[in-house]
Structures are given as C-alpha cells and as structure tokens.
Amino acid sequence: MPQRLVLGIDGGQSTTRALIADMEGNLLGLGVGGPSNHIHEPGGPERLRHSLRTALNGALQSAFLPADTRFAVALCGMTGGGPLVEEICRQELPAEKVVVTHDTRTALYCVTQGRPGAVVIAGTGSVAFGMNEDGEIASVGGWGYLMGDEGSAYWIALQAINACTRAEDGRIPPTWLKRVILEHFGVESLSALHRLIYSEQLSRGQLASAAQAVSDAAKLGERTAIRILTSAGKELGLMAVVVLRKLGIQYHRVRVGLVGGVARATAPLHEAFRARVHRSTMAEVVKPRFPMVVAAVCMALEQAGMTADEHLWQRMEEQSPRFGLI
Picture 1 (cartoon, one colour):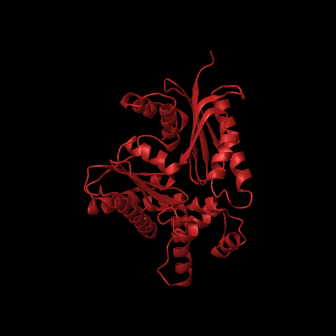
Picture 2 (spheres, rainbow, N blue to C red):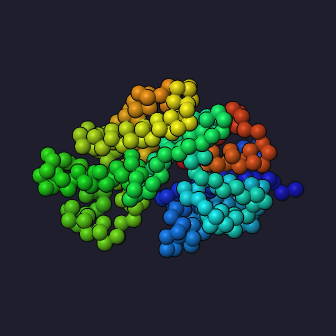
Picture 3 (tube, helix red, strand yellow):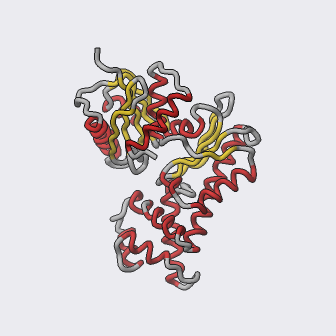
C-alpha cells in the first residue's frame, strides 16, 4: 500500500512554500515558489499556477518522491482567496482532498494551535485575525499597499525612503539611513532610485525587501530606523488590540502573536508591539511555535483524521529547523 502523505501550502505575497509530511508527522520535503497574491491582476492566475507548481516540484524533489505522487490531503493557506484561487489549487495539487483557506487561519494556528486568540501577519502586507471561544472570527487590516498595510515590510520601506527624501530636501535632519537604502538597491543617488521606482522596475516585493536594511540600521543605532520600526510595532499592535475588542476577549488570557517577515525585525518593533497590546488588553504576547507552512501541515493532518496534540506540535518545532524553517 502506498504511503499516505499530506501537503501544506503557505501562499504569500512574495513566496509560496510547499511542505510534505507523512501521517506520523515526519516532515519530508520543502519547496519554494513565487508569489501567490493579486490573482485578479493581469497574469495573476498564471503566476499562481507557476508558483504552486514550482513549490510542489521542489518539495517532491526534496523528499525524493516521484512526480506523480498523490496526497491524502492538501491544505492551502493563501494570502488571497476566492473561487478562482480555490479552482486553481484544486487543479494544480494532486490530492484526494484539497482544502483552501485564508492564510490568516494558518497564521493563527502558529500562535494558538487552534485555541482562541489573535495573530498579526506582517510580511509584504499586513492583516490581523482572531477567534474567540465561540468560534467567532474577526479581522482588521488587509487593505493592500495603496489603502493600508500599515506596519508591513512595504510600509516600513516606504517610510524609510520618504525619510531619505525629506532629509535630502532639508525638511528633517540628515540620516545615514540614506546610505543604507541606496546600498540595498544598488544605486548611487535618490534620483536613480526615483527612476527605478516610477518606471516600475522594482516590484512591491523588491521594495519591501528594504525593510530588512532598515532593521539592520536600527541594530546599529540609526535613530530614524528605530523610529520607523517603533511606529510599525505600534500600528501592528493596534491591529491586534482591535481584533480582540471586536471578539470581546481583550480581557481574557488569550495568546497574541506576530508572524511573517516583519517578525524578524529588530527589538524596537517587538517592544512597541508588545507595549501596545499590553496597554489595552490582558493578552499574552508569544512567539509563534512554528512557521505558517508547518501550521498548514498540522491542519492537513487534522483533516486527514490525525489528532493534533502537544506531542505533534513539539515534533514540528524540533523538525522545522532542518528545513530552514524558523
């Protein structure tokens, strides 16, 4: 009898990850593809298909499994939803059962393992999501890079670039964050960066990548970078607070966490996030136990009939670093 396997998919705005596990909770292989978002933009469906195929093929190769492998369950936590996303996932993923949900659900699982609480996802974009004891859900943010995404990597990068242009004009004091930003993008001047941005030679993901340079500058004590990260932490913390209020659990001892690329930022962001949550709620701010693609695998195992418990979660924590998942 062929081995029963499950597949977890984490479809993000910059990266799509696929992770394979067996029914005992052994992680077998990881694959990485491109972005899964903005399905309704020109080329969106084709981009999603390519990202899923690339991630799946990489996971199969990593696990030394044949290309025609079928899965008992594939669970997809996707940054964008809707019927078209579900249709493409069902077409591209060879599984007896394909479950497509929003990545806010997999993110919450990282923090609470299915219990009440809230999570803030801050990657290229930002959104908060929560659930109470009655299973009621609420979300805040997720308005996209033009209408929102406060505290996201893209937002942090734009705040940094704006600080550089204001300093260039003399509207604020000089900042050596300018040198950091120019080096990150490999240009000699803000005018050259201006041309790259307005000629649309830089994608949103490429712009958002500058958030890491801002974090690195903050570690070295750059005051403007510290201020920007502190502002980001406050914005993200406020999103969590509002979600808890909507669910009526702001005074419950529930867990709140921050996941996504921005969670790798330096201390000022995390300190501001924690302070904002603690100022208005009784929630406990915790680190996620494992990445979102691992949460997708856990949820896939549950869909396949396995009982998820502390033993499984500990195993997932122990195995994740082997695949570079931290």
